[in-house]
Amino acid sequence: MIDTSDFLNAVASASDRSDVYLQAFEALLQQNVGARLFTLTTVDPKTMEYARFYSNMPDAYPVYGRKPADTSDWSNQVLRDRKTFVANSIEEIAVLLPDYALIQSLGCESIVNIPVEVAGRVIGTVNLLDKAGFYTPEKVARANALKLPAMVCFLLYTQMQGDTA
Image 1 (tube, helix red, strand yellow):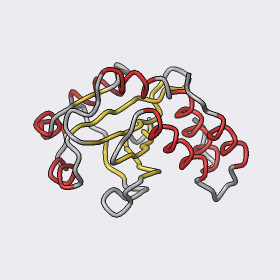
Image 2 (cartoon, rainbow, N blue to C red):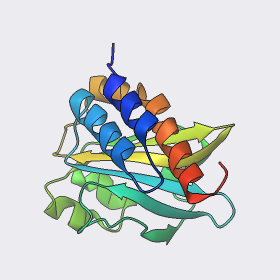
Image 3 (cartoon, rainbow, N blue to C red):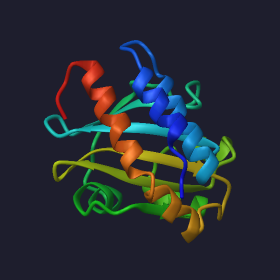
């Protein structure tokens, strides 16, 4: 069983200018799954843009970076079909992500993208990256088991931005 008490305490004490709940979510993921690079990205259903709102490597992957959504195999799997994406080699990543060289330069050659759903639509993704072959089926299952805390983060972030999810 995953202990979420520290995360719940951080959510309860979060203020409008605090990302303590996001740091607590990262700690929860690190304890249960692990990731060298960890980001959270929203998906705007109106503009179909991705916007990163948390990154543990802001120099390489800054927050609030925006990019247009696409209709790739990745977006079909994660956004349309609501299924977790896993790639455990840089070759698999290079096929889908144009920034694969940057990813590799950070020591990452595997990735997990977990869709976060609310009310029947994907509102964002949890993105975990680490060394080649890192994301075993067991680690992916543990990552997927953290969808509820992820949903809380996305909803709280959206509320703090004055938007609706």
